[in-house]
Length: 270
DNA sequence: CCCGGAACCTGAAGGC
DNA sequence: TGCCTTCAGGTTCCGG
Image 1 (cartoon, chains in turn orange, cyan, brown):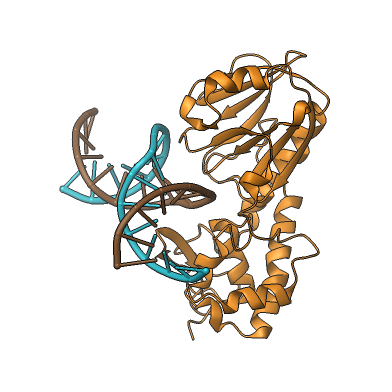
Image 2 (spheres, protein in one colour):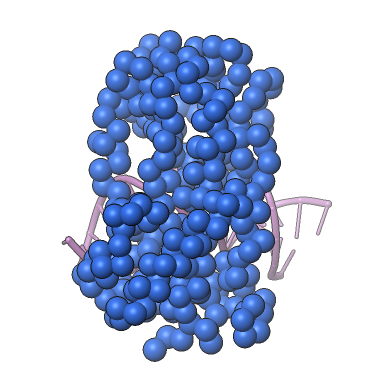
């Protein structure tokens, strides 16, 4: 599932191939992925637009276009963007055609991914919380915001309006690295614990970016390669296996309908 | 505002 | 073998 490190990798690897190119057209095989505007307005507005930049905010990818438009993509759970020419891969839901014959294939078996063309990217991105890797995200800000939340810390880390870009895998990894039980009420964390959590969130995300993301299930990089971050996972998707620190079997419990993996000994409930 | 649960989807995996 | 159920989870929407 693409989370911040996966989307960051896609952005970095796609960017050199597409910036400066012009979109000759977009093919939609699954129209419901287009959030706005309606297809009749979408096609004439995007065709012929030059791609002037590509950026990431949270798990969103933002294609900056000439003419004051932005194309915003979200890969949700099973999406990937594959770059190339030739026949579209299986499960391709949209194709962004470039003027030099190359394409961006939006592959998405689960059909959860979205595209939207907007004048102002902030209309979509304004509800996101801080970027965890930005300098303005400090331990003090994290502590103050956690104080206002009594939901399980795991659920709060997944709230994109609280902090942007963390998904199920990296939330589990960060909580393990900080030794914090995922069900702990967010407002029960001590200043020391929050300082530690703040540090490991950054470390876990930064290391995953260095490994080009985690290829569990359907994540691929634009060239079709996988990432290797999952090979460094301590607890995520490792239910029943021994904790790498203490050998206790890793537990899996549902929190907000999502599988949460943790070590009951290294991450005590109290 | 805050919280929890359903809905959106489809392939994979497990049960009988 | 084959049908059926369950699981996977990012986001949005809805109800309390």
